[in-house]
Length: 168
Image 1 (spheres, rainbow, N blue to C red):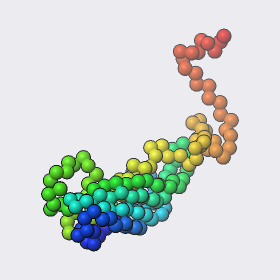
Image 2 (spheres, rainbow, N blue to C red):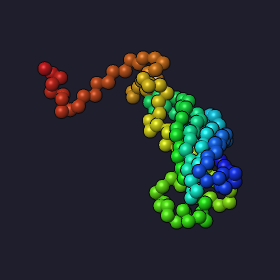
Image 3 (tube, helix red, strand yellow):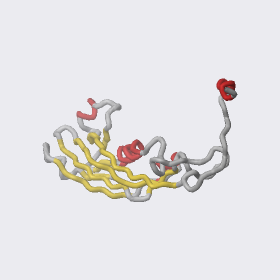
């Protein structure tokens, strides 16, 4: 995902809005067992401050993930905000920026914002994705999906420290 800052670079204190659409690379979701279902849509407002470019906007897409409880495939919408600084790598502003800041360095007029966009998507994915909020998951004994049916398994595992209380 690249934006062209040629028109904006000679207009300090002005801003420009960019609308980008691109297919999401499934490689970034490979560790999660997921894939992109929709294109990644980015609406980004970039402002020329005179020294650097400040960008903020929204990222939207839909990904397929595996439910952590029942292991079914589920669709998860992503709506997240994004902020970054775009700095020409030859400018004096590039020398004063620490590596901790969300910053994209570029040369010429084209800035590649793919890395911060995909990072925002990755961070918006829940740690424990669920197909629905009240997902029952799988039975730990027989493996049946508790969302689709009931199992007759009885779990009689008792903590040995409390076993004497069972006889009361």
